Length: 104
Image 1: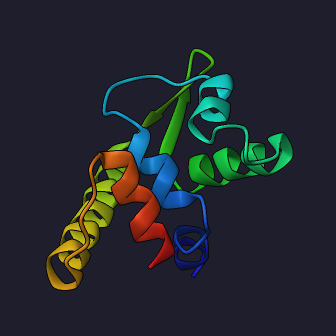
Image 2: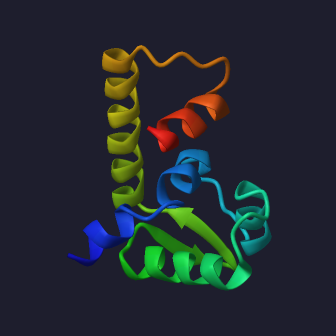
């Protein structure tokens, strides 16, 4: 149940969408990804929960997507593609798609 609660949160898709496989991210990178629209305390809790749920792992002060995190990200992208197909959502950039899908 904890996975469903976490995966349904507002910032999960936009953050996972921006994370690249095999690339490490420091806390400040997450601040940049969220364009400073997420408080540091909520962001810290988000990262801690993602680590607890094995979506992210921490190595050498950086966070990486785990195999589970990569698979979950793929599922989110599949959902985005399905929504675009059936709702004729057009977007000029990947970022626009993230924003539009998030609002649907």
